[in-house]
Image 1 (cartoon, rainbow, N blue to C red):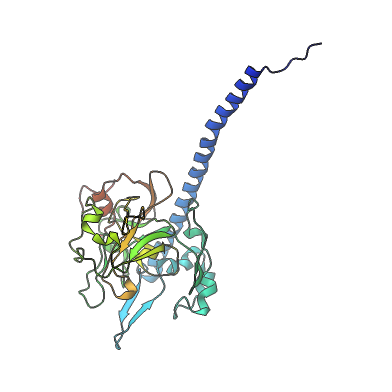
Image 2 (cartoon, rainbow, N blue to C red):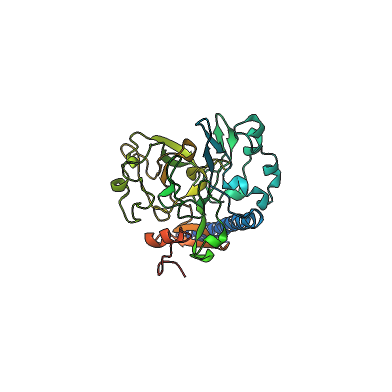
Length: 340
């Protein structure tokens, strides 16, 4: 009796069909997983936005980006707590907040263990580097993917200069109330995504061409033309921005609307870093602080963004720069530019 079986041609056809099905199935599975991660990311951001609202309702103002004052002896005092640390009690993380010694530096031995916790709600599930920062002085510190809106280019005028509030929801020595948001809560950014371990060019001293709070580069300017510090001359390279959730500073806790989401800005002496942020003088150093800290995400095509009314929207990276700037102001009155 003859045995029936597959011919070589039939076997090759079956293999080809299986390969085709896998080629169709794998992207679909990956897309479904990314969609689930994006939903979880939006939920994380929504929880933080609600925590900010409860903070304002309870304490009468939004959490400051930082507190920096000049003492009588000429030294500078800085509270190490940034907005993430301040909203912990409103995120059902009161256990962490309650064990933090807020009267001392967070590198103090009293704080090393507690600030080393990774707060999962501060990290996007699509973040590729979720490991805590192993800091030689602070111990392990968890990172953040959700940053507070802290200005356009202008963040803070610094100690010893006229007090000029930023145009954004959050700022140094600033605790805004909702009634200041005359553009409307549904038209004002409070949170957006950023990437962990972001390369940042910082400690440049005052920028050579950006030093006026009321005259910052337009969103369609060429980065290298308006800010030579992108080349890194006289600055330091810091490859660990957004890695320290308890810390205060725009490059740890914030973003600015200098450039639209996912805008690519190469930097370094030979532009060896493919995408960088740039910061003049850190707040704890006394400012003045001007910075381009770009909103970025691992989601294709844009970033998650939270508005002051607590809603979360996926914002396309193709958004016009002027509209993005307008969303970052609390009282800009930019008629015709706001999103519906």
